[in-house]
Image (cartoon, rainbow over all chains, first blue to last red; front, side, top):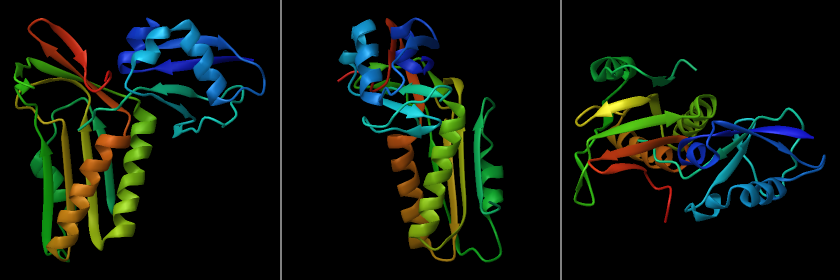
Length: 80
Length: 140
């Protein structure tokens, strides 16, 4: 399946874009997504940490991704 | 929720209207936290800050924090306003206002809200220095 990934803050600079398109297997998990992204964008591994959000909620590594889910990479937050 | 007001804004925050919104005849006190843009980070001059938000998730995470504050303390109204965009030194990126019958609840809830916001709400700031720009907290 093809998914779009939203990027914010420093990840937007790492991706060179506010959204990137990826091809994942149909039962892919957050863990699989992070692996694919880190292969393509090794600078992700230099971040202090980063989370993945699915449909506006923080996701866990074992959560499954579905086609049409809204996926976003959440680098360390710094609001306030 | 009429006891909660959450706003992400590109415009200057109006502190007085934030305070007015949480005020009620039942309140015995209001606690307000006002974040301001500081002119330096670790001894280095900061020129300005640029705030970016993942807006729908930032709103829902701020709603969760407000809900938790109501569960933890007997507070009456909770307001969280946060800026996006470019802010100059001394400008206000965040206002949190909490009213309660008694001050302990208002103080504790206000502190909990700003501390949790800084940990969970998907908002990012980029600091601009004389010699470049840095996304705060991005790298170890």
